[in-house]
Image 1: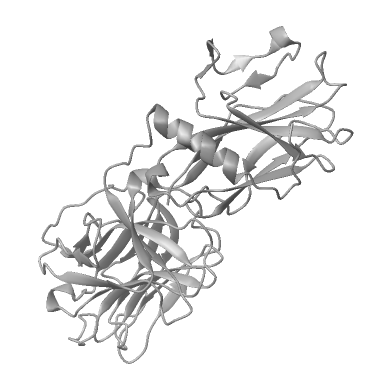
Image 2: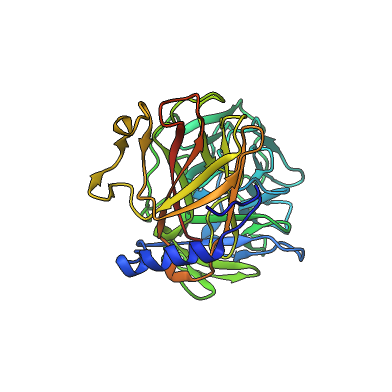
Amino acid sequence: MTQHNPESRSPISLTFLLSVFLAAGGAAQGQGYALELRGTAVSEGGTLTFPYHSIMNTRETATIEAWVMVRVAPRAEVVFFHRYQDSAEHKQLKLLSDGSIGFLYAGSPWGHGLVTAPGVFPFGADWHHVAFVRHADGRYAVFVDGASVLNSGPGPCWLTCNIIHAQTTTSVHAHDTGNSFLIDTLRVSTTDRYTGPFTPSRRWTADAATALLLQFDEGQGTTVNDEGPARQTGAITGDHRWVPIGALAGFATFGTGCPGTGGTPALDAASGSLPRLDTTFLVSITGLPRASAIAAIELGVSRTQFAGFTLPLELGLWHMPGCFLYQSRDITLGVLNSGGRASWSAVIPSDASLAGAQLHLQSWAADPAANALGVITSNGGTATLGF
């Protein structure tokens, strides 16, 4: 068995296993696309901009909503919507680095903005619906996945609630180096669509109250088409890429480990790490026995079959009662158990054909006092390679 230090990488073995996976059936790309905007050191980074059009003037009532995924907390903020951005009349919906959502509904001669409590937006590899609503009586509301995260009392209505025809633009953008987010749909409406908890729709069609509607179905190029009544074309600039929705990187744990002298081994992706193409993916393992340095991580292309057995397989016959095998054991790699903790990292190839491929991971460790065989296992984890 080859031993690796806690920060070791295994690009050769992983590439080999992925080649086996592709030969056995390959990765399937899903339907639909999202636009990923990434921040840079220059200006606003990836940006989607629409020119001014009077039909997009929001009224006293307004709803701004989008389906977004922000996998890592931004360094400062990312902006899901910015209307009249060079004018005193601007409106903004943005996510801040602490997980709070800020919004601005500004009118001449001054603006008014509120920020939710921190942590209302869940970062990670899942889609979330964010909506800002302004009611006719001046009340504001912010919703995440249909649940209210902020309701403010009636506020002032400015003389220019019916926004002046400021010749400025609408944009969506990622600020600052290291920021990144994906957006799948965006709608701006001239009515207050939500008054209480609701179940967000995953896709919308234009109606009489639609001011701007983006579905991001293009999947290529540097333009985005508005399906609202204005039928405008938006321009993408800066650092961006189109991402197949069915080919997004993700990691999910399943099953349970079996107890040992150091606790119950737990395998998971390291905080903020995902198996994204052309990056290094890091896995952490905790709850290992402190008295033994012998541990390993196993990678399999299947979580349903192994050597004629159906998975998960209870290992009592192998003198490991309460322990389970969760993956097909195609590759075994040693890791160094240091004080009950270990980590393993791998360079994910940049090959786009791997998007959607899944690898199933599990760890085991020597623990002579735990059972007759002297081995314990962790839970399983499925890494979905992608963008």
